[in-house]
Image 1: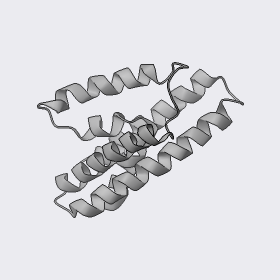
Image 2: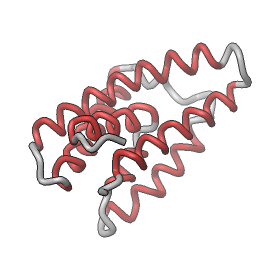
Image 3: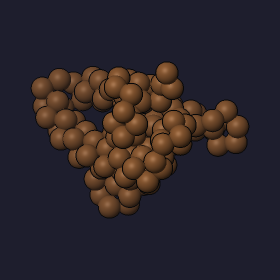
Length: 137
């Protein structure tokens, strides 16, 4: 993945837009909340498949994803010693864009492949984005 910090912040935000806990879990430290976030991310991967889960684009859900994307994008920028505001904005932009893109993908893919397969492919995309964006090399 390109090493551009705004690009990486956008990508971690996009991972967050697809799965709200995946981005933050990828950039979390090893203490405090950093120990809990991976478990929350795993739980979300399971809960996301339930039919009663509300749409990610309703205002409260979108706000949570935007905030989580902001925090994850800021963490990427902070780890690189770069502009925190730019990282925060890129994280929000990625989270909001991917929230809508992910909803459109699930609607489209759900008509062409089994919905569970569509959801699992989206899980894989979120995890791959988060891993690549959080890579500190």
